Image (cartoon, rainbow, N blue to C red; front, side, top):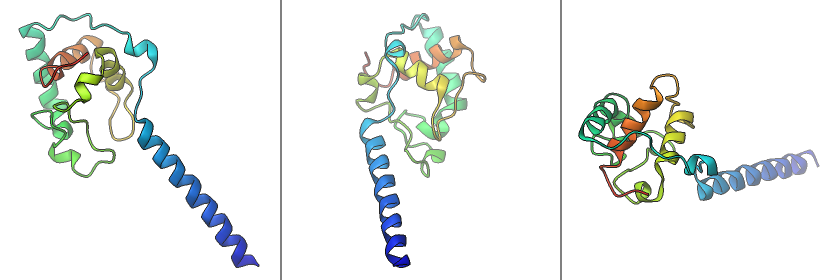
Length: 135
């Protein structure tokens, strides 16, 4: 009887964890609506893109890759994998969503709210936008 209860509880826990993991994978990392509507106040000038590139190379490329392909050396063992900005991801996300994610972080993606000023984060977004078309 004890073994049956143990297996039943184990099965329920396993099922619950599995459902939560798959539900999380399916929905992804979604920014709030107000973040999606944020507009980048920093114009994507050559100077801004260059500043963003310098910051990206120091703080982002290790995981997201020098080309923005998500294949940086430190990203290989991460779960979830770093974003590949060269694929459709960049096309589907607004600048405001990128800003919110860089600011808040999640899982292996750290928050850069304290390490980078808001202006520096916008410069990084201007550089990330050079990898692909975006909203």
